[in-house]
Length: 73
Image: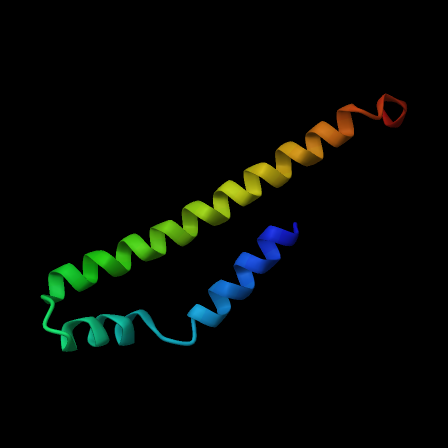
């Protein structure tokens, strides 16, 4: 849970700059729009994958903890 909260905080801080602004900054450096757009899409997918991995890890940990306490069934 702590990792998820840290990741969400980082995502919120990173969210201070819009995807459009990141693409504009990228193209201002002379990189093609298509490359900048693809980079932004990959960045967003990476964030989504990390969130999903954290959620699965938390669910697995919760299920594991639950199975160690059979008197709660």
